Length: 219
Image (cartoon, rainbow, N blue to C red):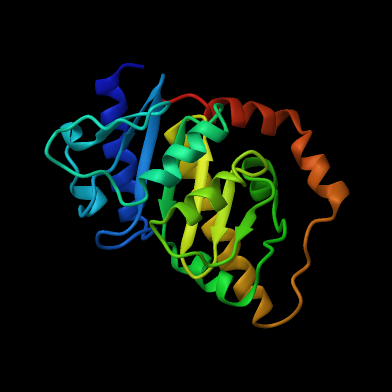
């Protein structure tokens, strides 16, 4: 994939995040990696309004920013540190989904509730509230990106990673749905979660392995 195609993908998934209510207004930020560069949403933009040429190029090893007259997202360090910590990451999506935020107001550990969550996301990490846009938050997220592909941020939102934007985006959708289901079930009783054995059985299904391989393709 070339740079121009990646910029198009960034615009596509930014629009999908907004259309599905995963972020509102100028909140949230998205990036994708191409070699030693990452392409990150600019600061102050509603992400659905970003044009292909406005994604900010940042050199991952040095942190140098290509000057196009725009500032990178205020969460640039969170993206930068995460790519450095886990070279397998190809994309990062940070959103503010309402059910995810609501979940972090009452719980800290999201259990595995249904097969899609087990297969596409696995275990979700949690970071207690840290002041946004700081190196403290960047360090806290980077500490988790090796152990989990989804991270709930207390009183703040969600970070998902993937080998590409499609995988990271689908994980965002699944975690938001998981939080919504948990809160609905918890309102009327004790949720019945998958056991460790059931979790492992889903992960071992050949059909799930095939679906994950499809998700790893950009198209």
